[in-house]
Length: 439
Image 1 (tube, rainbow, N blue to C red):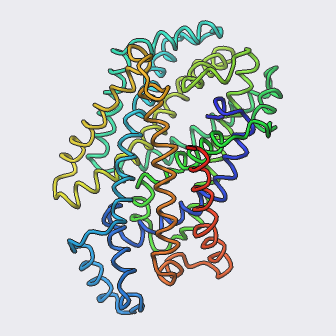
Image 2: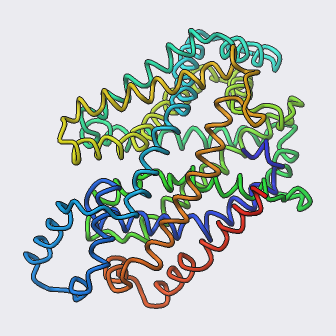
Image 3: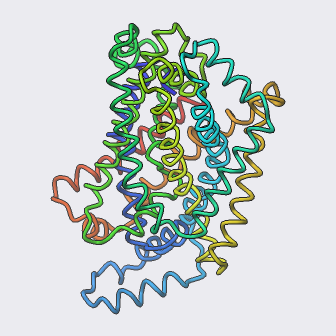
């Protein structure tokens, strides 16, 4: 995204979007999940009904009474318009995973490429050739897409708290350590300062409504806002945990790793005179093999990197599909295994369109975009910001102030700052960017 949107100008707007727009809405979404303790649709329905009842705004210390009222709202058949926001998040997660799983499948393929030693002393032309040959073969892309979706569906059908959660506590720090090592290596490259300049010195003339909309969409995408995932995680968050502290740590860590990845990739781009604006979604797969091939022990590091990148990808895929799975289990009363099969197949089938976008259907375009780009833009620039906007309005104007303040349990100054951002700054910013982006 940085390479396609003007470098430092995009990074600047992205960081501002994270702090001013995305983080306040992230807090709101986690709050909805923890307070509702259900799938996104049901949680929004419960909170909407709760806030519309004057009697329920009088906080009752009797926990049994509260539980009874929650059950009553959960079982109510009354439809609320705010349920549509939950539905939109679930649909966005499925659409995003349909193309995300195709790209994530590449990580599996590159694990085997690293094992084969093909990256040893590889040149830029060879790296680009390997990648272009790979994505031009729809059969191979379909195979890796299928394998990734099968693994995702198997893990989600078994539940995620057991093996995967324990593994992630080791594997994700491992990926972080490798990223730190690669960042140190990038300082030795001739294009290091050019890469840093490209990322951190913004050309303000490149800030357009399209760049701002892209940066805001990326902020929402990277923090999983508007997909329902945060509501699911919020529903599992203990009451002892601080929502504002947890979300702030996640937002900082996510942004830091994204910046770290740029510090690794762009020096390689400029060292080998690769045009960042034309590389597209395969930039990481074209640049990092060159670094791995040139460094001592690079073959081992490459294997570890792509294995850990795969684990990072599959944890994200689980968070994308879980809202839909939870909805099917809770609302349709079917087993987790059956829900995983049904949602997984739908997602896998939609992914075929993305596969063909890289080869046979690359020239088949709507509004100047192939299927992959159309889906990417529709979700990241329309569905996620719109979902975030509606959640900001919901928590800022519909949910009773006392319900939120009790749940967040922060100082009055911090609460008023959050409330100001979520009621005024975020909705106005998202609306203005939307209007400017589509005029």
